[in-house]
Amino acid sequence: MNKIVHAVLTSILSLSLVVSLGGISFSQKSKHATVKQQGTNVLWSDPKDIQHRNLFYGIGGKENAPNPSVTYKFVRRISSGTQPKTIVEDDKGRQWILKTGPEARPETTATRIVWAAGYYVDQDYFLKTARIEGEKNSIEQDVRFERLESKETDLGKWSWSSNPFVGTRELDGLKVLVALLRDVDVKEDNNQIRLVKQADGSVKNVYYISDLGATLGKRGTFLNKVFFLKDVPADRWNHRAAKAEPDKFEKGDLIKEVEGDKVVFSAGRSSVKDVLRGVSVENARWMGNILSRISRAQLCDAFRAGGFDDEETEVFVSTLQQRIEELRNLSSASYAKK
Image 1 (cartoon, rainbow, N blue to C red):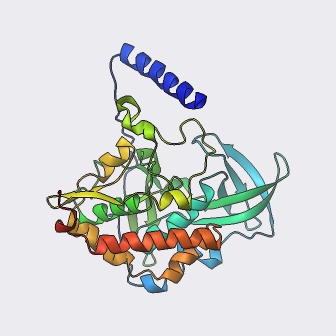
Image 2 (cartoon, rainbow, N blue to C red):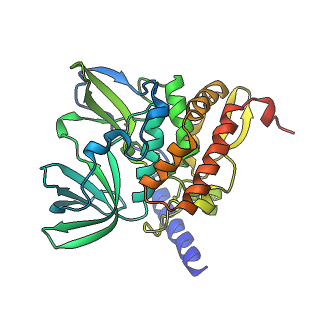
């Protein structure tokens, strides 16, 4: 309780400073792409082979997976973000961004589900242990490996409120996945535009979520009910706190209500509520139908890929399938206000 009181007092002092400087702002400074785009803008591609997608290895496939038996060479540390990250190089000269901590498992799993639904994701893999030599020799535990892409393919960030897909079914579908997976970190820094070359030589400017680490847990904190703490993350004062917890993920509703032809998803943080606002019932059903084509075995593979054990996987998969079915059968009448 003392920790909570201290946290509240700290926030009150911070609020007072903001007020003294000229008012409260919950918006974030835009960081839109400044690099000239070269190809067609793409957010979603029809996953016609969804039933055959390998959700254990994900978008990168088995052939690109990191080797758990080799020693990785330390390159440098990344200071940005709340989770520890390091760049290493493998015996093939490929570089990887390693993330340890509570986001390693959920991010690996979430990328597979988002990819299965037709959206682009980074090449992420999870290793229980990784040997690193360089700055200091170490054996890291529970590590997410993300393939480091060339800087030339980085076209910048994109905003949920201003992008080429505002008002489209495809953007609504991505928002449904944010709600379904309980992504509680929807800031613009986590949205990437990347130049991706196709097999036919053409290029596409792919819009996607590049950080899915804050998923598969609880929606927020009770502090979000306080006006000036309405967007504070649950791990604000402890970034090492667990993220993917099956007992917390299965609690609570996916959908709060339906207002007219729009879905109101259950959410804790105000920034998440803002992102999820305006999704149509029709588009939510559309994404539910796509997700329903993913088999239970595939979903289990996605969680096994993230290092979750059988008991955890059972809870996560059962909860997801129940909520996917809820999306498929969504109608205004089902959530009419009494």
